[in-house]
Image (cartoon, rainbow, N blue to C red; front, side, top):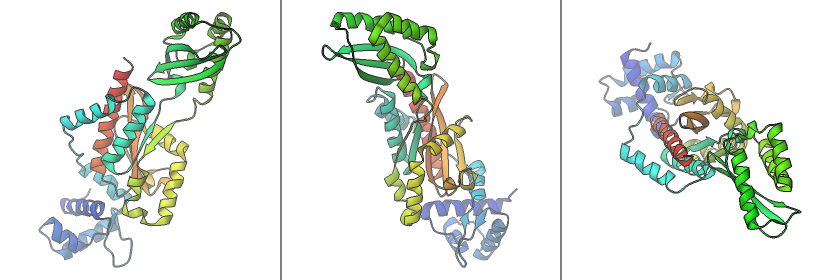
Length: 340
């Protein structure tokens, strides 16, 4: 365990490096943090911290920067998440929930808000389609041969498809069929539509039933693919680390690997609360210069997805921690209200 003086110096190094992105020297700490000890003593303590792996010296004659181990100690022991007022929370909730009535819209807007709050890249993994529950089916005539099939699902997904039919249906007939299909399927998850139900749909509803089953099959075919929304690439490129073109290119490659990012968020989402994975703690080599802060969101207490922020290891952990927690809670509240 670090003694009090080493803790104060490590905290100063982390804080200063997060703010400046420049290696921190002993004179800087003595001048800015009023620790009551000389630069020479600070220098000796920094040497000890380097020896035990909490800070590193990136260049000869340069100051020190935190190591992943140093950031981990800071996050676990020293960090105090930023306090967010109740009024600000209500303001964000109103901004999100009052404008958007579909899940996709809520998720996209959530990433925008979270990115603006943190200045890093915000990510949200959408719920699996196969867990969605059918809520309402509507058939809308387009002309004598074509009908628009609209599936409304909980939580708030809407899928539709234009189908061609051989039979001519009146508006009144389509209203009746819509009602009967809704009664038959309401409350059933995609993944629970079994052989008996499929046979009933085919037998009772003819070409409309077949088209409906085709639409459901198409959705299920993509149900194992995690859908990832993200926002904030431009904000991220404003960080000093990305003045290096190679680092910027590497980040773009990571963002293109949506399955990798979705898997990381989902894996961290197996644990409750806000999770922080720092640099080398990431199992994927492409992610080892970044930190990932995540949480889960849900409906009525049931977890349905993950939300998070990716940034350099030199991220403002206290702000990001609070922002991720805030947006996870607000998104859960908005989705719970949406499906009532």
